[in-house]
Length: 450
Image 1 (cartoon, one colour):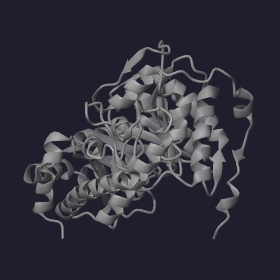
Image 2 (image 1 turned 180 degrees about the vertical axis):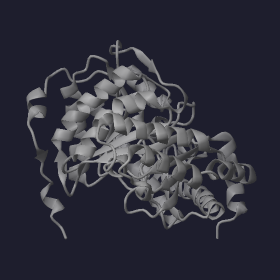
Image 3 (image 1 turned 45 degrees about the vertical axis):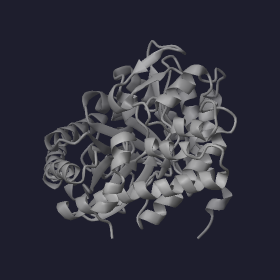
């Protein structure tokens, strides 16, 4: 049984160590909104989202007040829009209309973000997929709350290099239309159906009509716990992280069950991810330093992150039967003050971050790069990260933010939870001829299991 006494035990974590429930995300299926008329489709989508999610924000605030648990974001994820819009949206401009309807609906119910302006193209692209992807720059620059994702690879299917080549162009164009646009766009390999975290959330086609997923965060809590292990061995360090993750996950489980009951919506998963913020003391990089590293990026960083990620998951699965999503540790540069400091000091490079993504929850996240970076280089970085996900049978993602007019060493301000980031250097050597090849990289040999 989960009760108020377990929450009381974590009051100090909430008050002093930045523990929060990062998001309650309501997944909404839009498959019953399908129409061959674009205006009717937009109307159906607006009506479905506003009707289904009308109580999401009030219930979230009510739970916050009753239990004293900060719930930072209330969000919505919807069925990938390339599927929903395929019958009516014949051009990229039609998909932009759908993005507008989603944005209006999200604003009407008061959520922070809405995810699902997405396409799943790990093996190939339909005309609707291409139209949606080509609409992304305009859609993200003309809306405030809509987030987009494109899944371009999987362990089972391989990597769609045509889609990756297109995404290099799309990311560059998006950055030229909107400074914050690329921060709302994620490229995935092995994207999970039940991710509550933006910008990559969407309601998978395997989900029901509606579902509640909760994302919990607690880098500050884990850091404080790790502080008490100085001079101790790895066994004590692992046990400390695991026990702390257990307590944090119990908070998320309570919030998820309460939200599910009050909204009369099935509970999906608790995603226990150490998702940092720009706030001092809420940093994954600081946890790594407490383990004994001078800076994140120093030799030993990948091993330390692997330990952290594994123990967080082990503690989480003991606390809830439905841990899922992207559970583990996020390493977004702009959203983590410790990562920002490490990058500015030269301890952290894109190549080191890529190595760390082999063992973290997601991948290359919220990294500012020079505005004159070529489309093929962006595609090459994406391809490298997708290969890590495909071969290692894990979710990986890329959220690169080209900064027009900015050079290495400059700083880009995004604001809010998105923070700020130093512009990082990219490898200057070309991969253009490789990226120009057409087709897909086949699935690895270990994918042939049935």
